View 1: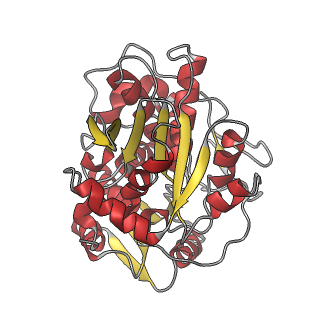
View 2: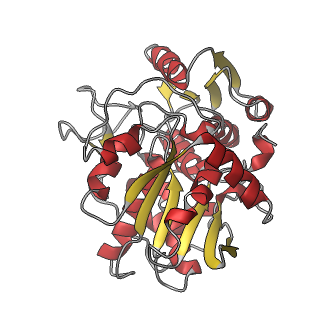
Length: 364
């Protein structure tokens, strides 16, 4: 696999530097996404056992905190089996660690010693941890309303925190202004290298399900990197004849902030300029999803879809899944909330990705 290219003009990602967007303003993405070799590097830490699927980053410095290999557990919903992929058990408490491991390795390969990132909380905490592991000084821009435990976690790793008043987009705008000074912008949303780490969830699920893909995969959608990375991972496994077909993909947003849902419902392939809105699900409080258009293009014409949940349903779902022993943040509970629309209608096995722990939320 070669370096990413701009989806607008086709220009390749440069061999030096760390630009988060192309000079034309386009987003970078990988043209090809090779499936993992059956010969895993079992001596490597964390996700690096899948390094054969990392292409351009296969020889990058290994940065690991033991991420990945998360449990897949069966539980019941309305007397029907569902499976929960517990990404909340990653080292910093969220699936973001998969992307951060690859992103930190990429930055190390480019000689970066200082970087900035913006986040609603989990991505910032994750990057702060992996930056500390890699010897990179991190500055994290977060909304001032981000949960206290997440901010404390970021600071504990030694990162410099900048709390920005107003909606989530304000933090993104502030960090992009900071990046204009020449500092590396380690964006989990824009830079595509973290997608390689997220795709390893697909590899693990196939292993855990005995060599087959889920029938239906239910995933919260914020910037869209989680769902898009899974789509690319499963598509690569189909291309390599490791599985017969991809899952039916169901993305979930809060109705309080649902730009991808709105576009999907209108049959559109691009996102409209959304109104600023809010939700208790911090991880999907994203008004300008970077991978939203890519998700829409892959969903249209398939059985997959985007659903939306209102806030009372989300709170009820958070308590309902906790009552089964799974203490997760509201973003994770979005997937649980839509099960009545999936059970008995979409193919089994139904797998939900639990994106983050509830230990960093103020809901309960």
